Length: 268
Image (cartoon, rainbow, N blue to C red; front, top):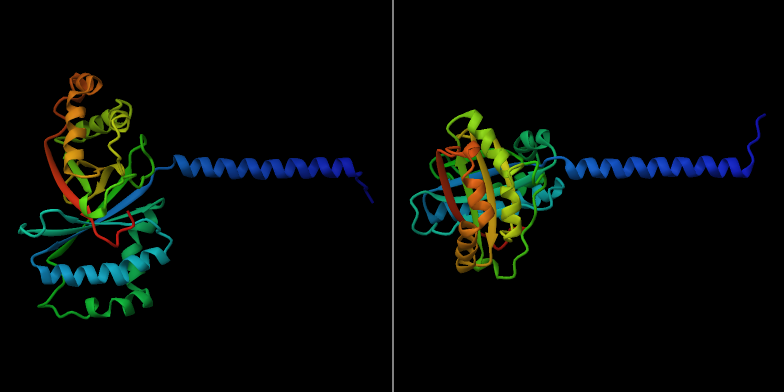
């Protein structure tokens, strides 16, 4: 029988513990550097009745079901001008580290008995009294320059906040990747960060009705705060230099800006 003295045993134990700690740190670093995936569900509605039906479902059934599925931070927003808009909208932002999880999420949730029970009224609506006109689903992958989403650090009440969701369509695939490069290697994300735009995410649209396309969301305490930040951005010397670089010219063919406000039950 081979006998090991205590010093050898302690040395082996120490090496094993160090190895486990090193492997754990590497796993954490890989997760930290791995780009998130996002799903944005846009509920298109025509009147207040549809808004009420959809919101009741989101608040009492859908959001709790996402939490049960370990999606802890979900953003739910309304258009600020929903009252007067013809196309009234509710946006649901769902982050995940796994594209596979997001791609199968709807089917998985539909089989959730608790969700079906909590949302029974919503699920049992007749064909001629639907809770929405349609649902639009957008899948995104976070930019390497900001691989994980961040909940904003704001001081104002939810009712005053401005969440600005921007969509930049690109004329060609080549110019699409030029625009992504402008955000990442070019330093556009760094400019937003330096000027405290409180960004939630920057991402490449990998599936949606408008492509090629990128989207990002910045947040502000109120409208005046938003306007002041963009005034500083437009006057920023680094931005003026970056936006004038030939490589990035004509990389956006169409842009949409949607001003949103978080609902009172949103996680951020």
